[in-house]
Amino acid sequence: MQVYFPTSLHLRVPHGLPEAVQQAAKQRHQTPAEWLRQTLLRGLEAEGVKLSESESADLSSANDRSRAADGRVCHRRPFADLG
Image 1 (cartoon, rainbow, N blue to C red):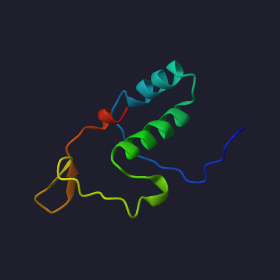
Image 2 (image 1 turned 135 degrees about the vertical axis):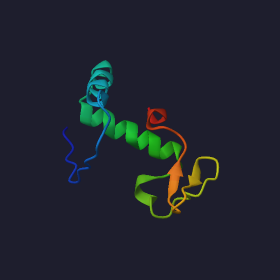
Image 3 (image 1 turned 180 degrees about the vertical axis):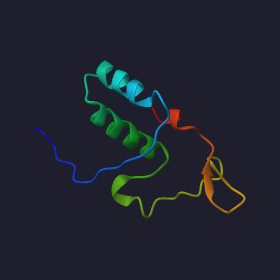
C-alpha cells in the first residue's frame, strides 16, 4: 500500500549527505525518502516532540540548547546524532 504525503520539505545539506542517505536506505531496503522520514520522526521523538502535538511540546530543555548572542535558540547536538 502506497501512502501519499502532501507536504514536502526542502533543505540544504552538506556534500556527501545525499549519497550517505542512499546508502543507509539501501541497507534497510527502503527508498531514501522513507529512510529520511523515519529518521526524522525518530529524532523528533528523541527530542520529546510528537508530530501531532508539536505546538504544545516542551522545547526548552537547557541540556540540549543554548542562546546565541542574538537570542536565537541553538542546538548543541549535531544532526548526525539523529540517526
